[in-house]
Image (cartoon, rainbow, N blue to C red; front, side, top):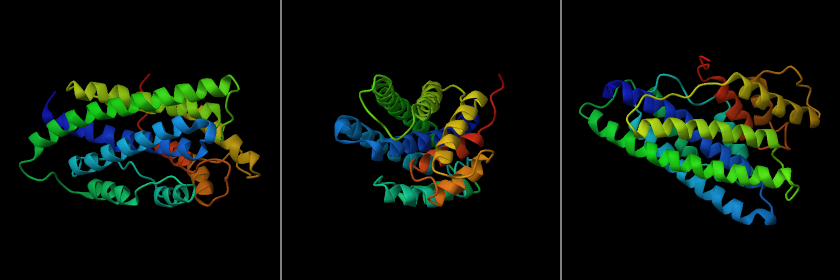
Length: 245
């Protein structure tokens, strides 16, 4: 594959995927009780690693990003997550926004960008795998009744699969191959239904609400039983190109 094409694919994958891993860890972290201390430490390490990937991806991807990985609710939802105790760096969102707005790639940097994305993809694959391991352990504990958790099991399952897709894409990119993230309709519908039911349980009239409406409700603090970042993940996932099969 031509390097020109590769760096565009890589920029798109990391622009969407790294934030999904970061927000997945951030969503689970505040829900960890004293019985989940090891899980909390593992999630904090994943969050820090994903922050690092996002920071490097924004630097490498300037002028390459064709579709925004942010939503109009992202900044407010990040602020709400900070109120829950999840330390999310708002400067990363500004860096990503600047990268998305950049008109062109700085001259003479494409070779370094190519090498940078290959190295970054290796780290992305490891970070995604770390999250998958934590999500699997947590899901097993929930099924066996060993832990009560604020995030529903179906939501944990979605986060696992979304991060697994990012990890798989990173493995392809680290080998110099083409990769992209896509929206899987069954995953989207299941996750949206899960979050809708949780919002309904909070007394919110949203039975037929869109993903954007759900994210707006969460940003406004009307679904206090769930981490608001879950709703931003849902809305960003809806924006991914649909799977062809």
